[in-house]
Image (cartoon, rainbow, N blue to C red; front, top):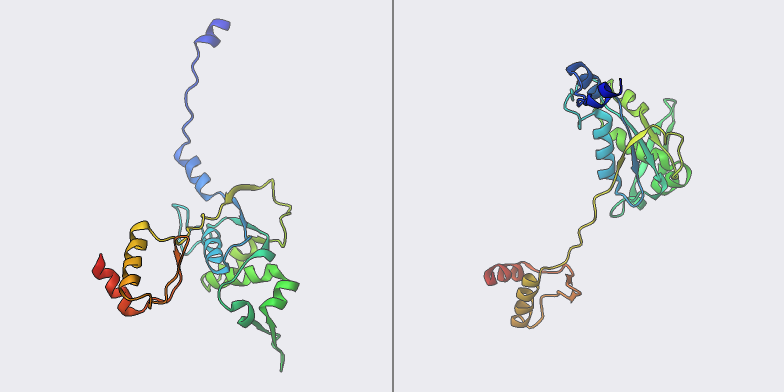
Length: 208
């Protein structure tokens, strides 16, 4: 008996086509942190997961998406003056029932609704949108009751610092010397401030 066991070799298990199809149709739980993430691009990524666009079996007419758990909803950020200008509106379907709430008030009361509304705007406006939104779980903080279900954690891409190359910095320095420093550009630790005029940009290309 021992001899038979020693001589046995384990063969690698290859899933059958049926098993591969079932794995492709299985709904995975993704965890996404909204901490210091821009609202717009974050909503786009979440919508893709809810729609199943990352799967090889994606079909726009079928609901093949996954579950998405969003944490730290209160730490999401918006660009520009959206925090002061954005207003959310809804109607109660009664006369005079138009309700408005500003972004800052919504962030204080219901930060989860900000992400939910943004994702809803990214999804196609059809009968599948409500089903997909049911699989979106948004939480204000870090804690949530779905930790055992999460299999994939979405990590934000590292930010690329806008530093000038040494060659570009040298060309710009020569240009500033030639124009007497009137281009309105300051260089600090390899960074430059916006303010280049069209003539300055043309001269930079000529120097190259």
